[in-house]
Image 1: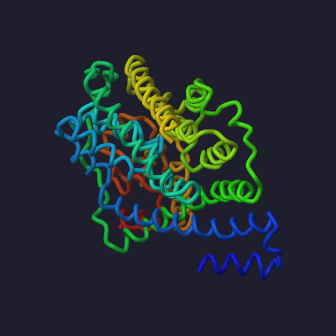
Image 2: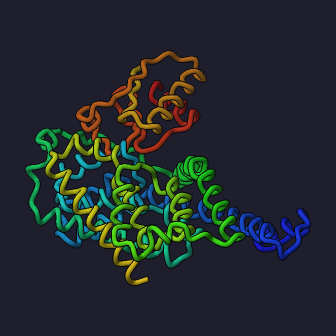
Image 3: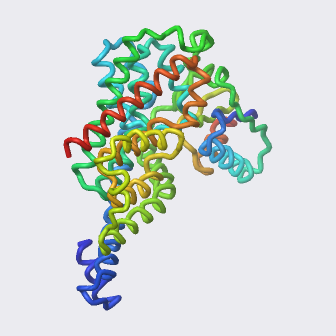
Length: 316
Length: 80
């Protein structure tokens, strides 16, 4: 149906000749943008609905008293479905630690939550294809699980700020039980919130994609930051860490880099560094973590991202 | 009536505060709206997802931005 619409729009309404590059670019844009928008609305709605059944309080109970490893896997997976706003990082962290979620398990969640989410999945799927989207999610989970296990093994509980252990958590929390109607309404309003925020970025991303689709890509970056340059991944990650953006904002940039010939491993590593580690997040986490634990967190996750970048560049 | 917005000053928290104020205007009601940014106080309510809305010490909603209409209903139900 979308193909028909795109055909009609490009060839009938605009009367563009089929063989021109500009025609192909416009056709791509008119087909891809509605496709991604539809996918985005559908997936965000479904995930938002699921989420009304798993509020943070329930996640906390699920993760408390879990064994290492099983707990790490569970925490990283739950991280996918939890939207992460840096402003929620501290209450979540304290809530987890207080209710006996092991530190390593808490970190698996903390790594996965900003890096992997449904919006990133849809956008990667729409712009780069299923293979890249699944790779990103799989690898993101792996980094979150392994980093959590390592931090757990290092037994760094004493490097959490002391006041965290002293905070008394009230138990009065929780909305009144939601009716199905409430859940649908809340999910729709969340879809609206996300859509307004993400839609412009997606349009930019698709426009870049359309441009590249229509015109042959110039391998500018491939020459300087291609596979042959052993420092490319390292530099991409080093640039990515201080930058702050959510997955949706960074996608157009990532697409442009990739289209200009940056290898996939380097591109994904850059995206993970931007979303998974960021300056504002560090500043906020510093309030609950002593410098040594914060540095360990950055180090472990950073090295994980580097390994992933090099591995993909080597394999793909 | 004492309305508290829990959250550490992120965009969504400001959105919630704005909607609560709109709801108050709709109701023609005057109430104290306080930003609670101190983490110890936020945790004292047992809230893990911000922004959260607390009216007269009761947690009304966590982790979402209520629409002005929802906020209006919440204020009415508490004052009733």
